[in-house]
Image (tube, rainbow, N blue to C red; front, side, top):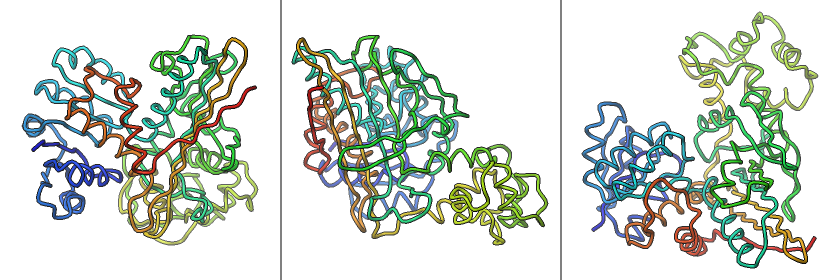
Length: 441
């Protein structure tokens, strides 16, 4: 029986473990500092075992766990992946993650090859299915004798249209703190042959509206450095490329306002046990807690007191006289806690993932636009669309590695047909499919 070590018990882990236990009949060890959550994920199934693991140095316990596994899936924070990868290299054990390839991970490529192992990254939803969908179309264009001139790729995890019912236009199907950290990443893309760079501080100011056929109008802002994928996708250096996130309109203004209020700060924790939310917000504005805090926030942000932005903050509770719910923390901790309380999915509510790729290709006698769109909703009282979209590609790829169907070595992402073809094929059985449309321009 194959033994898989799963590190972490976050929002998206359970469908991964379900796949290993129910479909593959593997023995699965779930290692986490949250033993209760591990138990909920395993749900009493005999081939599931939980390990209490603090993820802190020294890493002797990690090395022992890795050495006893046939494959490791790391679903813990990305900063830990290189540590896990080194343990996998030492023990000659393959590794899978859904996270972006960091420079530290990229630097382990030769060591991984030397150890004869695969470290597969970016095999989730975004990144993951977006890569695989785009790469398949790129290879089809090349096989038809065409040349890619531009690639635009959007990804989203948002409430379904039916359950988009709060003024923020968002609910959490993944880590809120991860969302905050991602909101500080710089970005870059190429448009009209020019490289556009966006600082982390300016990220949410750099947005525009985009219409997706048959789905509606969304707001987009750039997602990290798109330009590194020119080489990864095997494209020519003169191609335009943009990878962006989609949200319902108003999101970027809301997030930029949080930044301008200081709510993204994650420094030393402060004592909060004697504060109300109104007093907390006043402290961010250097205002007296006897002032009209909504007006003070409006003045600080250059907004009218009755603006939609201030109404969102009112709804979230930033101006309430209620006690702050956490006793100690930084401003971002307060914001994340509030968001989790007000912006979680109810059991019956559905989230929605969107992946939309548009590729302009030049042929001898024509120019084509090839569009691929995936939209999947979550299951009421079941798994979210996001949790399955992130975990199923990783789970399927893990099975293929263990069965010897994927033979690549080193630090890679899923852009080789050996990986993306069988993964996309099996995803069809789970109702994750791209709809394709081609038009001549």
